[in-house]
Length: 394
Image 1 (cartoon, rainbow, N blue to C red):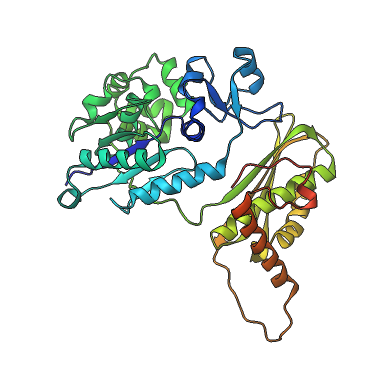
Image 2 (image 1 turned 135 degrees about the vertical axis):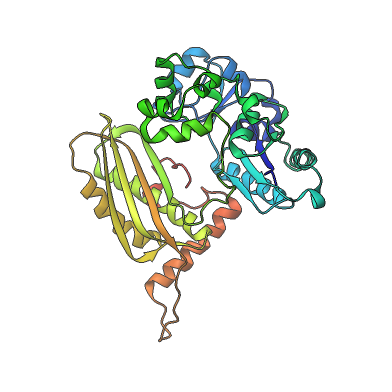
């Protein structure tokens, strides 16, 4: 039986969500980027901003030279995550095999063998699009193909609005005339390397044998050989529940002040622990990465014993990692904290009536989580984080 894969793509996802929340922005160029930092870069933008020459990853200083009056909106990752969850819940009515990324508006659905219950794949895709538009006000692009690779290329063909159906057996013919830049799975370095050989279209690469591709690409030759032929056997899978969580903080000005670094670290610990508690998990390992002004990086890993999602405990363990990683006199630009090896918390009843200090802290943090959930992320703040701008959510 041929596989049936639906790919949903909400073009310019973050910008689309913001415009949906504030319809007066429709028709105007907008970008999504953190404000208040001189080195901020564009996270997302709508089609109008793209036509003006603005691209993802572009520094805001360059954006202001292109268009000084462009609307800049700070990213709201919690909101984007909520929308992704709503789309996921809507899609579950059609299949449990759903794959999606973080805050990017991309969904893969495997509906192989469901035609007797749900009808043809194209009808399923159309109904799903209609439901998402009715519930959330978003208008996704959709495509139907026999694998994830071809389905993703098909949605790129009709961006920002439309739909595309690639019939079984037509994968090679569909990909043949397309430029290599539309093919997912190729790195920028590989695209540049192909262009040095004057290979800009998929049909040109397809004429090369596996042995010829092995000369410049070595172990990647087989994968590239399959990509240009539309061969992709990777399954549609849910995100791993034990995938690492991380938080990032970029300083407004590069710093080597110990207090600023510790305040930023506590903010990252707070963000990480909040995400862990939300998923009923604890972390048993921390990974701290410092990025310096000159582009250098230093990473160090430490264990959490016992595993925890308690801010006070985690901060006590993370602080020594900070000073172990901080080995240079160069100012620090960016700090990342990652929680690895997530586990379910193990609870054990106490033998005595008195409540341990850690249990009291857990109750406080759970109360703070409830307040923030009801009144917003900034409803409660610790003294360390009051003067520190909010970090990107995990």
